[in-house]
Length: 194
Image (tube, rainbow, N blue to C red):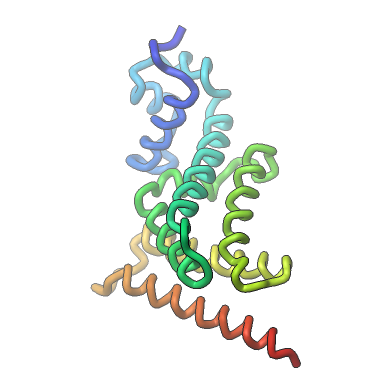
């Protein structure tokens, strides 16, 4: 029997906090057990080993990221919504570096739970882009581009890639405004036709 009050949710939250504090690789069953004040075998009442925990961290991270982005875009549309999405995405990676890495390192992206959580996030991003009237395929390419920009920025920042004494938030704002200007120009060109 595990520690009183210990359940799958509390184990997962402790693992996420451990990942953010010690890094994704710092999440081991021994470290998690020590964090929770239990013996390692007790964890098996709540998770299916380290691979299962890593999958659950990926799902949890995707759900948390989607929730944070949804909060950020509430009541916004068009460029304001896209800009808010970008800021919230990078802020999530800043606040939850280990959990963010867990999203990117999901053990099996084809796992049904991981795929469902990823699809929910994609659906939100497509909704954010609705104001641009993009065809489905173009909208998917646009999401890919935005995700690439945000992931690249967040990863460079997390790994100390911005060594100059410039304000990272100002750089991020400029990046988002430039992306939006390009997106709006592309939409206008498509509407104008050949």
